[in-house]
Length: 523
Image: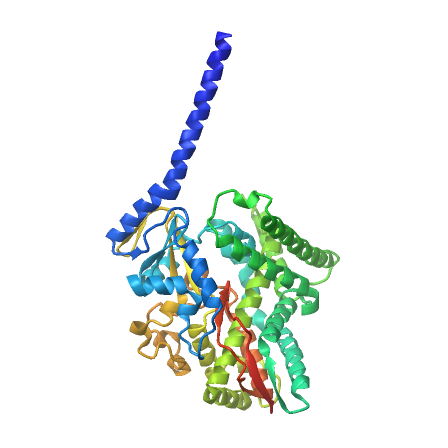
C-alpha cells in the first residue's frame, strides 16, 4: 500500500513537472521571447508596432486588407502599395524603410538595403527558406522549399529541363496555346471589327494551357481539374495562414483542414496517374518526350544510374513522390507567374499606347506576319524592356523571405537564430534613391542598356529572386510572355475599356481584382 502511494506521488510529481515545463515554454513562446526580440531589434534601430499578445499584427493585417479590397483605386495609378499591403504601408510610413511586422509572436524584419539583400541571397546555408507555417510546404513543395544537399540534388536534376536549347523544343507548345486564345478573340470581335473583352480569364487559361502542354504534353482541358484544385487549395491556404500558427493545429479535423487534405490527395492522385503512364511508356521502350516531365524523368534516371554506378552512399535521384511534388510546383508557379506578367503587360500597353506602337513595330519588323521563332524572340529589345519594366512595377511576388539558421550577422545587424526577415520586392523596385524620382512611372527605356545599368549596379531588381536560388522558370516565363505578346501585337491593337477598374490585389501572386477589360481592334 505504501509503495503504491509512493508510485502515485511520483507520477503526480512527474505530471506536474511536465505541465509546469510546458507552461513555461508556452509563456516564453507567446510573451517572453517576443518581448526580448523586440527590445533587441529596437536597440539596433529597427521598430514596428509594439508586440501584442499572441496575435501581433495579424488582426490589423486582416482588417486593413479586407477594407482595402472593398474599395478600388480612384484612378489608374502604378503607386498601389497602400492598397495591396495596407499594414506594411502604414508601418513603413511611421517607422521607415526597415521595420518589424509581427506574425503572431514571430517578428518579420523588413530589410531595404540592396547590399544586405545581396548578402542574404548568396549565403544560402546561413539564411534559409522560412518555415512560418507547414501549409506552405504543401502548397509550394519541391525544390523551392528544400535546403542543403536535398535542394542541391533536386536543382541539379531539374536544371537540364530549363536550358535554353530545351526551351526551343517547347516553342510549338507556346505557339499552339497562344493561337487558340487569339483565334477565340478574333471570333468574338469579328462582327464589329472591335469589341470589349475581359482578357484576364483567357490569359489564365493561356498560361495554364502552356504549362500543361510544355510540362506534360497534354492540353488545358486535361489539366483543368488540377488547376481548379490548386486554385481552391491556394484560397484555403490563405485563410489558414492569416490566423495565428499553433503547432499541431493542422492535424485537427476542422472543416478547412479536412478539405485542404482532400484537395492535396486529389492533386497527388492526378499527377501520380500522369507520371505512372509516362513511366510505363518509357519502360516499354518509348523515348522520353521533350516536355518538362520527360526531361525531368530522363535527368532523374541518369542521376540514379550514375549514383548506382559510382556505388556512392545515399539516395539516388528523386522518389516518385518527389517527382510529383516538382510537377505540382511546375503547375502552380508556371501558370501564376506568366499569367500575371501577361495581364499587367497588356494593361500597361493599353495605358501607354506609344509603347504599344513601338513594340508592334519591332515585332512586325522582326517577324512580319509569320510565326515568331526562338531566335527572333531572343532579339526583341523593346519588348524585353517593356517586360522588365512591368516586372519592376508589377512583380508577381510582392516579397521574399528568409530564416536565420543560427545566431549570425547580416551587415551590421545582429540576428538571433530563428528570426525571420523579408525584402519587399515592390518597395525596393520603386525606391527613389535607387531608381530616381521617376521610380513610380512606367519608363521601359530605363532598361535600354540592361538590368545592371538600370539598377546602377545595385541588387535592386529581382522579380524572380536572385543568387543560387533564383527561379528556374525565369527564362521559361519570359519566352512564353514574348511569344504571347508578339502574337497579340501582330493581330490586335488594344486600349483600356471605360469599364476597367484598377484594383491590384494579392492572392499569393499580384492580380487585377476585377479583371482586365480591354477594347480589342482587329488589325
